[in-house]
Amino acid sequence: IPLEERRGVPHHLLDLVPPTQAFNAGDFCDAAWEVTAEVLRRGRVPIVVGGNGLYMKWFVHGKPRTPPQEAGLRSRAREAVALARAEAAGKGGDAAAQWTAATNLLSEAGDPITARQLNPNDFYRLSRALEIVYASGRSRGEFQVPGPAPAGGEDGAQRPPRTHSEGHQGEGAEDGGLAGATAPEYDYRCFFLHSQRIPLYRRIDLRCEQMVARGMLLEAKWMLEMGLTAGSVPASSAIGYRQAMEYLEECGESMEALEKGFCQFITSFQQASRQYTTRQLTWFRGDKDYHWIEIADHGSKDALDHISHNLSQAHSSKPRDGGGGRLNKEEQRAMKRYQTVQQIFIERESIQRIVSPLLSK
Image (tube, rainbow, N blue to C red; front, side):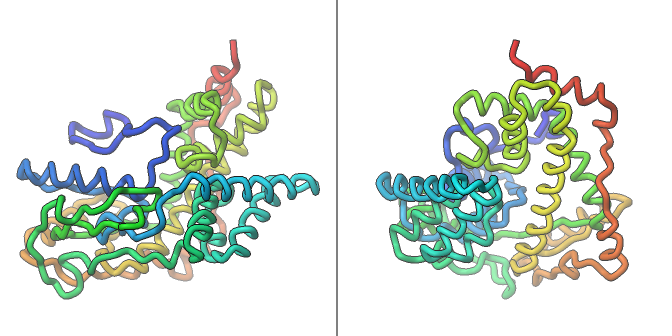
């Protein structure tokens, strides 16, 4: 988040670890609970903002009791995935075929649901899911989040706060650790902000262009120079960075290839971001903790008024989904006609300004 967009508001949990270090939902919970307790000690109210439904669920409800990482099993899982990819490549399979071979491996091992749900080429999380099967004989989804529903839930009951030390138990591992951890019992008030789909998609497309214009490709090149590959760690699996690293690996040091493949890279980045938005809507639609609030075209005042009113009440009202961001028939027809319109990278010169610094001197 650029400093000018923070508007002087303190932001936490940014730039915590290098891209080579894994940082997952369990790590996030540990860090977020600690910061939350510190903010509350200062007499302030923390606002937790994010788009990853799993991270938010664990933050509110606690971490599941998945097996901790074990070096031997981790190596076994990674070697099995690498072998499946190599066999597919040996048969002339492209990247898509190699991903299919790896997901088939996970499905046959006993976790077909995770195999279907993972983002393409997210080999890091696929290997972790396979490791969990090897360690426990169970799928990742069988490990449920501990703890009751959050305070201020459907019953409107507000429970007394519990200290961070009371709620935080056990050592964090890849997915929270075998011991799990119960979230501190605060009075959580959860809101999901959404807007009309096509204006939202336009903003997403523009945001992707802005990220590239601000240096994403140079960051991706730096990550490649550190020895990372697309999908090898969480940082290189993130939407945008994964596509950028794949693009740079494919084009190499060829200016012609970089220019020729640039538009396809931008398009794939934008498409993956829009698809993630759709998955967000589906996830939060099934989470009954959230009040759904539509951000109207004329601004966010109504949403702020709604949130302020809710926070002023001793007990939260029963969450409502407001239709869950579902499209009516007219909106569905408009979505079928949707096409990306680039707003920054229109002319060749604008593309050259971005790709030229990528060439080694």
